[in-house]
Image (cartoon, rainbow, N blue to C red; front, side, top):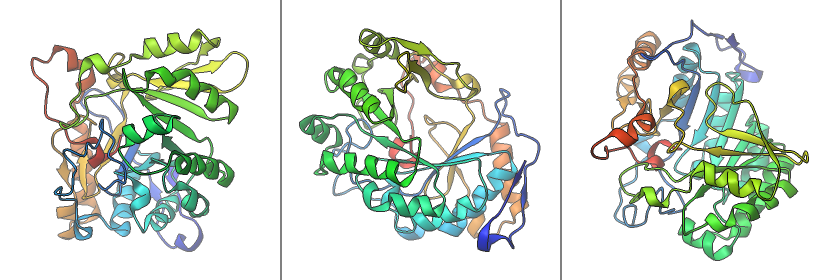
Length: 351
């Protein structure tokens, strides 16, 4: 496969993909998640609790974040190592002022898929511009349709209506399929599963329910608050006939189609049904550290050598060697660990 250029970037060299890079367990590098900022306008307790990310928290200054050009350069090297899919994350990526430029640069590399995960609060004003820049699709986090529950789970003053408007704007702009991600916590929003299903079906949206995970070290995760994928599927199947779809390689969601033809839904079960066995994801933080697992503790510094003048060949060697040495499978090991391990915060590297 060749990663091609387009438009005014045609003068740049084509990126020829090398042989697929496999880790120590045989898993291929295919998917790159790029965090463009560690900041967010929500303080969701399961991700970025205000007790930890309050007024005194030090966020990265702009000088410590990768520039748009640096993101493009690293993405080009990842493409050469086999990455075909890129997702932009945060924090909240729409807080990054040059996000459209980043999208334009990455779209010019010709990835098979270029997507964005957002909380949707600012999506209505940016959806059309991002689509013109080359973004293909979006996933929007939405944990509740009840204004009070939404306010509690986002711990923000953002109106629920702003997120709903953002979802509609994304559909209108052609950022399809628009997927909606819902983290389900027992005692918080588990009573809304069917309401969310009906709302999504009526709007041709695919809803994805996510088990509450032990990401980071600040969210006070308790296993008792996990509503399992099996429970979610059972709840939905009592109201609708659903048919499981064949799981694609490296897909994180187990998907189901509604037998009446009105769309599909998915469940992401990192806690009860780990999918480490074919995980193909690498994660790049906004300050240029490479993480090979959502639950990793440390990342490989790429910004340092990049800014010190390391040539592409040296940077690509760093990337490839780190992936080849990868043995991560935390979700499969979680139940057997005597004590919880320290993890990087999810808001730092995206979901």
